[in-house]
Length: 501
Image (tube, rainbow, N blue to C red; front, side):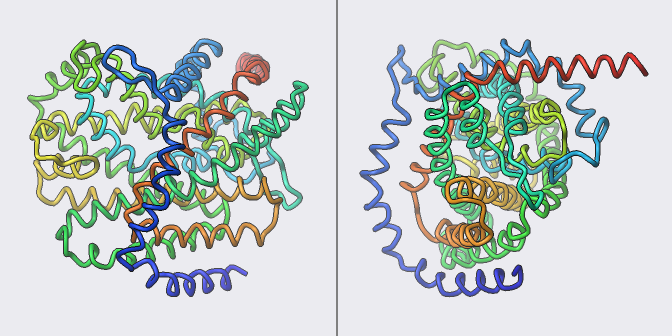
């Protein structure tokens, strides 16, 4: 079955690739989607004027969820951090527990879905528009996002479904339908669960797929000759290669995904972190002023975009794009963990926003700020601005960054394919055929993402990503008491266990 699926995938890639090479197709798609995208985006990202800033209500919704979780769970983002590290290291783990992957592999899979081009390009966008001060609010968003991830992923494991073959299905779809049914809100839970699943499918094909291919390709074209280069003229080739490699991994399911990400995520993170530290310390004399500009800029009434409130909202929005706290994607991956206690994976998951936003995004910001490229005024944006910052120290570094960006994109895609599969099977039922069909479609969309200028598709996928937060956070608020009871019982038993040693 696996061999047949791979051959079928490759054949479809070869058939589909010439179709995507027509120059007018991208314009036709953008023209068709423009009015739809405009309407949906205006609803999802509806904003109210506050001073000189436009405050998007969906961002406020997510900020409120993070603050609520941090206070309600008594700053679990700090108090549970040490134990979370112990759990990831394998301490307190049992091989006999139900599930498919270890704590470490579940974390690696979820991290591979969040650590991506948002860490490279998204941070650059935030600093370009909001100045260095946006970094402060990104860090704060990451910290409160840790508590929100704790709640989401605890619920994900508690209400997961163990299938007859031992595989696991979990995520907001399940804790919305089952958890709210326990609260006597069965009809509401069912509606919210299906809403989430539909939004998740769109987000997986857009932001979790086409956006990743498109933006990583853009960075590769930038460092390999720009306009007129081979990749620029034959972009579908890159999409076909990525699609084939992704297909090889995702056909094996969560166990193979976990195996790949557990090796890929630490490797690419170390490469990126070491490279970033080299850049930062090459501009050692700029480090004090960089931190100063971050603090001062965060509270400055004259922000680059929209004053103080504009910088705050911008920082939080880019952080959410990066770490996805409150979106509901991570619980799908964490639900597959081998554990008998939901709280353990909730604790492990709080490390995710810390690594993604507090560590990686902050290092990217320091690279951009210490090199000063964001003030050059050359009109370079996103990942290309980060690439310029790397190249300012060593000419070869942009090539390394392009490699890392490609790995980031690849790892994000394989995780989001799993999220999409679980959303599809929730709607249409657990079926191997349904899974294979969706995976083939997912890979074909990778070719589309590389070949077309899908501006409106990207806007729609962004909207779908944030729409996931609406039903998800409703469930978080209603079921927070369940998580509190679970965690209280767990820590009581843990303290008794430690006292007996």
